[in-house]
Length: 274
Image (cartoon, rainbow, N blue to C red; front, side):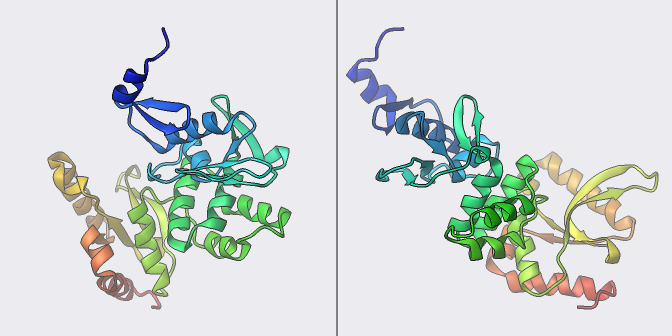
């Protein structure tokens, strides 16, 4: 392959960082931006935050989020790139596809200290779900770095992290419930049929009171087959004695008080002390 001409770069590629270009036919995902940032920052740089999370397989990361790298010394942040000046210990660094990145625990540690509460919990739920990371692993890093900024925020966030959430709306639904003072729901509850085999897994709920809460994403309504299965699935679950409270985007984002009322009523009817 020969070198690209200026004309080709201008018409067929988009510049992500100085000297780093991407074909206009390639979607700019968080992982793609992370790799581009590392190429720009140089091999001594270490990806962290959302950039490291993306390479570790975390989902639901906004591709417009700036990449994050760690470089020791005085380096200025630039457009779509945040540069952190700090040192990581050797056990906080790993390599993914030839790229130096913060370990899963360190990436979560950095996200939890920097982001505000709900975005932090959404990000850490996704990271834990994708990698098996546990909140206690981030707590250990907090103990090892007692002078790091944002530790109070991180510790308060970790109390509500749950890797069982399979989407940001599921995380937000759980937080609405918990913030209302209701019992914390268990996530990913297996539902067994009369034959003892699992035929479904519910988003969240309380086994003790046989109450479930399920978030219906857009595909539950636009996909005909999915909708048909949802109806059949709900009927089978309710026939086993479960109370199912369904939540959609409008209820979650526009009427969270009604969401709480419905969950509270369902728990009360089942004998929960709420």
